[in-house]
Image (tube, rainbow, N blue to C red; front, side):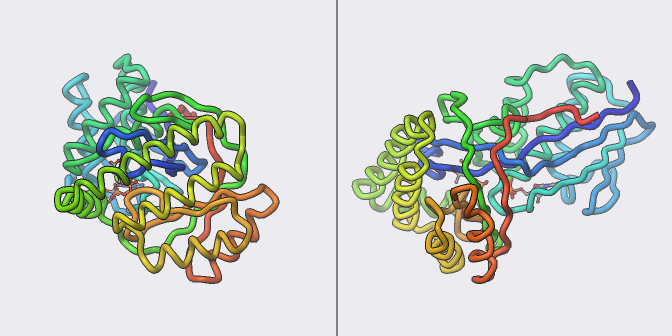
Length: 304
Ligand SMILES: Nc1ncnc2c1ncn2[C@@H]1O[C@H](COP(=O)(O)OP(=O)(O)O)[C@@H](O)[C@H]1O
Ligand SMILES: C[C@@](O)(CCOP(=O)(O)O)CC(=O)O
Ligand SMILES: [Mg+2]
């Protein structure tokens, strides 16, 4: 085999971001926004995407470069040409880094017949994210590998969510490391106040699991909105996110909350299938970039 193309999905959180950093449960969904990586045997290492054409470049391609170097420890990679295309907004809490990491690992794994299984791919992907970001839960890379709806840290596959999903992007940069650090400081200063909030978020995830199984989207929506109130309490919302969240709720969404680190980036709304367009328009009217998507069962996969 001289060439292979793999893709991996982005993700949204139903419940549990930030609390999951402290071992509480979260429920995360792979969504139908994908990063595609074509790998061709070559004499040298070449990485190409809208970010430009380079060789190993830890400034422009920290994740892809780290994957090539890590996989070179497993197999002899004399040269490889990697071409990347993606429809996942970058730096917005939708797991674009995990998707490009996982798709690149799988492309090299299959091209060089390394024999890595899904768990190996997810674990390797998590180690790459931790190396680059410092702090990173295993959520993004696990969900991008496995697809579907997953409860972490249990790593339990749940039933599919099949209502409408509308993502609203504030377009404001959000540093996961900074937001996680802010919460850590608050927790350190007010443990008796913040610890119960984080454990309540974990309890929301555990309660939500039963509703996901029964497709009780109104009840899931109530819990997501409570989760949003608790995220606001620990300081990770923003005026821009609030504008999109309330626009979505007022337009008929079951729920709307931050997804990921917050502070900027994206919110997510669950909607009746018939209301998705209306909710997306409401988000656009208040300055957000709306993306109507759905849950995908397909984690990392071969495209051709
Ligand atoms: N399509 C892509 N091609 C190359 N690198 C990418 C791509 N998408 C994301 N990345 C890498 O991931 C980084 C964004 O990761 P991160 O800050 O964790 O945001 P996110 O919440 O989207 O995962 C980008 O700066 C880039 O290094
Ligand atoms: C805040 C946190 O729980 C989720 C961060 O998600 P993202 O990097 O914004 O996609 C941190 C983590 O779980 O690594
Ligand atoms: Mg990321």
